[in-house]
Image (cartoon, rainbow, N blue to C red; front, top):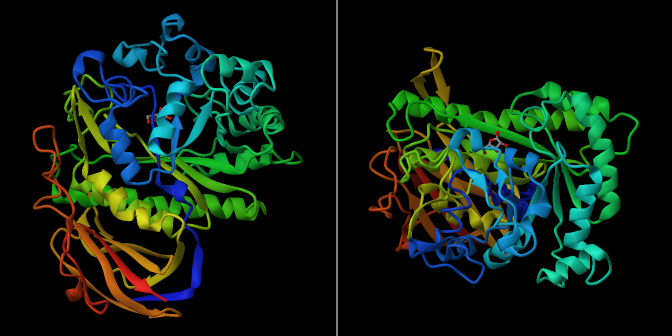
Length: 501
Ligand code: AHR
């Protein structure tokens, strides 16, 4: 039995709904064939041409924000290619063309993405190209999107293209991975460019939330160097992007138990990475103005295990192991509600760590989708610091060959509108855990919901022919759910909701 203490005044911060964000890049089968089914596929689409299944499912999880158009793709994307009559849009080299031979038809552009966001109920987050466009070009995109109806020539052009009212795009990324594909810059070079771009972008729309290119995982030197390079300059951004892919271990669906634990441990590193970058932000006295935006995260298995069998670049299957990684990662973000204001799983469909796999007319939810569904009660809640003994699981690390340990339990808790939401992952493959919940500063009433996601094997996954092989189970008899004995089955994700006052 594990004692879990939740003390009401011990609040970490408000769980920004945007932590539950998604990411769609013009890459492989994400947009064309995924979000936008092929014309002759027979798939049901909504008015904006997007696969209805995905729109409906995103609405069901209250998706708050979607990042677009990349990723690396963003760094060669000219937004002007994606507006105006579809038949007149240019065919361009896609960033990923050297890997999958596909060109970019630009049939999905700003208006189409906005229609998708509206249908799904999400806010847009635009990643801008600061590698090969000028600050003036980006300022023009902001003008095009956000200027009041008729107020500028670009607002008039927007209206001529079918949208009189402004799109109201709040989130703007200033570049993408500028330490890599986005120009291979040093932090000082990026800082120097950021000064120019961010000043003009802030000036174009003072209400915009600008997100600067931050580090790749544990590259603390990038964060230090960036702030060094910005010394003496105003900081015209409020988000610092962080990318961390935990990678893979073994295959996407075939892996040993030790490979399972090894990857879980790599995913758990997210906490240290967030905390250390945050300590740099705090050390620079910027913690009241800048927060972290983990706008790419997830597993990165080998391609070829998804329904396209490798035709879609980076497409991979997502198993129950990926669902557990989603659960522990979202718990880390909830428990860092004072530091992380947005996070975007990479990517939405037919790609890395995705929520959906689509082929032709068919589309299914991965186990990761179900985790987002189970966690949605946290959005906007007050995160409460959980105090508990997480226990430990010993294993032989597949990469170092050494004995290593991971905590058995990952969890987070939040309170909103008289409801306590508690989400927990039991990471052990063999042992159940039982929590004895003790609350101070609030009294816990009846259980309102209890849902469990687990499967006979962590290798289990959903596929086009078996879309519900891994799906959550609602516990019908809630009267049997006692706060003093909350059972977590081995290798499971659990969600409990209790009435509190
Ligand atoms: O998500 C795939 C790619 O990973 C993105 O384009 C890039 O930003 C990252 O390296």
